[in-house]
Image (cartoon, rainbow, N blue to C red; front, side, top):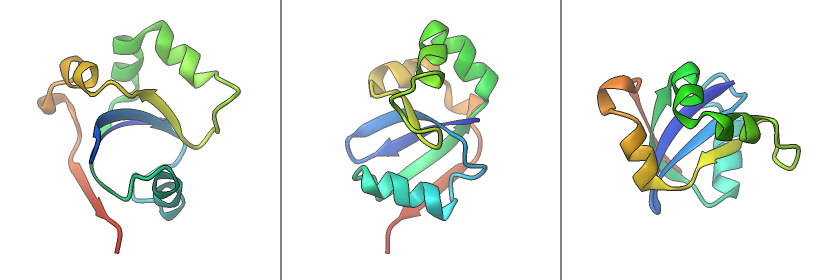
Length: 98
């Protein structure tokens, strides 16, 4: 599982995904299906996401109502921005649908 913070048109979100890359075409298709076709994304170390979100992380991870390949950990952009420093995040990934 991989965690990432995406900066979208409606604000930051934090996701969990089983895709190995934030540039995986199948993940991009799933995001596009949710209306996210343009974003700036950063990897978040999975252990860090688990520590910062605590029990909520486990609830999202084990939620049977969400797919295994894409789960939203945090829709609250303000909280996500407060939980992570830019210095803690990986290299940025830029995506803009053609």
